[in-house]
Length: 547
Image (cartoon, rainbow, N blue to C red):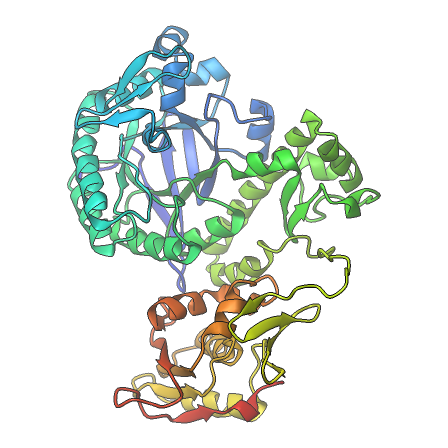
């Protein structure tokens, strides 16, 4: 490929993660990643001003070609000198191509090789959005980074449909690049392929034959599970060239962004920060705060004591609660301003941790806190007789905070990832044998809610941070996956399961760490080892658990 127009530079790569810090230049300035791009669909970020966006640290705003094509129209941008002058924004702008909006209109558009024909919601006119029209519109808009027109489909689509969409996206990518002509604007290709690894690979390999300035991961956050999105994101990011920006489109919450940085992505956009602000949801260093809750009616606390934004410096939770309950537009503005600042501050801290090669500890600390709702004021439901318990097979949530109980035997399952001290010492002694030794095989005789298994995995990860270890193959036995399914459906009560390994194990019967080489976890259905089950070096029995 030819050199990127963005003058891309890799500043640092985490030694124990795929996270990376980069710098590149657009037509309107120097960009440092990882970064989050607030969504200004119609040349405005909802409830925000350009001044608040700039003060919060926004480097790039995202605008949408589909909407700006319909109103105000490319002729307005041509006459007024582009989107930067139009909206008085001094920073950079990335324009989406309109592919997602085509996907969002399944009953009011027609797809052909030429493009998508749809009816304008402004005046009812029939319009063809082709790769050429999309790029011509983006050239008129004058964005710093243009996106090729792609065909977005549900991530859960069947393979035949996915392959057809991938192939038309590849052809449209070539037409989009040709339509750029001599414009100095940069252009990104978009990798599609839904949840099929071989199709993602095919899409990436095809696009990398074309001189794009960066690459986006498309077709996610449109129907798949979180664990599936993370797996595909990691796979796709690893396929893309190291000397180009990587952009995950339409994702997501702060913890989603953190997970994607861990997997090697540089750029993100999503409407979430301003969308949830309208109903009083704020992201903070202590997790998610739901300001509409009455518990904040008299609160004189700052929204986030660790935040330096003007909202936290000026307003109490009580005032923000009042604005939210009365649906005053100012509430939307203030909470949105804080949320955008929080995203940018998170990205700044992440970048600094990568530059100092301490990203993994930051990642592990933040991923457990960021998704928790109202950590200081957990929701409690009034008692009304005997509340119905949540069940899965012969297991139920029991008590408050809940444990997992086997209904027939009334046995409480372990849900704390903790090992008996003697067993932990034994495992560590084995692991400290030469790294080229055969894998240490540990049998976990009862999977239950995976507390013991996760304790072993977390132990390995902690020891691996200190130096090379002998490989570890953990084998868990289970006659009934119901308790683990129940726990996975209620992770807020069982935070150790946010690790993600159990989600993969329950779907695939095997999980292998991508960051601790040699760490593997497999599942045996039943209580008896098969001929393929490796012999145990250490057996963790039920008696070693904290009950």
